Image 1: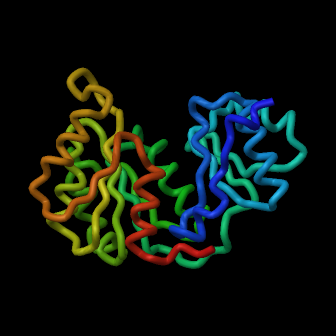
Image 2: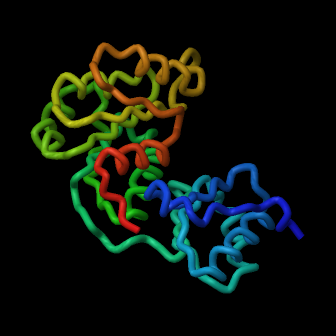
Image 3: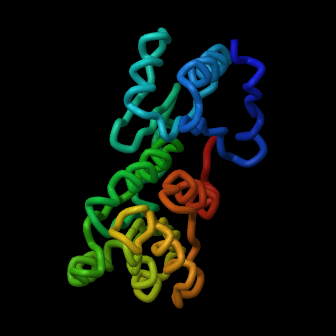
Length: 220
């Protein structure tokens, strides 16, 4: 029995407009299954993040209900997502293909809440023409989420090109002094682009929630 370790916040969506997400990294399969069992009994939808393929397969064997699992982003929906309420209001711009895992976590979180984002991939500043070719398209969005590792210059460049709020997500992509994303994080925090919002390293979920709060359009 693990029930004593679990105290779910069923009222969070009513308070802040965002459900309690289940962060699966560090939780045992038994704990995750117990959480899902409590949620399912109440017909409560939820988003699971950092859910590994191995844990998902173990849960799938032990539970009778279905999860919408995406192995690349390591996310799953229980009784979700919401019906679509917007398309293209938020654009996710990622610097390189190696950033796609984090960008996918952003996308899946937004999709869970019914927002279908526009995704623009592999437009890092090493090939600046690729980004400039898409600036007009990016400018049509109400919020832009920029996902980048290494020197993480992408959000700063975007900050000088578009009007929309920009949320930077540093990733742990890069060699040596990239230091598992710390250089990208510091670069974004030190940006000369005014008004840039920055999440923690690899925190695609947090970036999506920040965008939803900016929009003020999270549905119950």
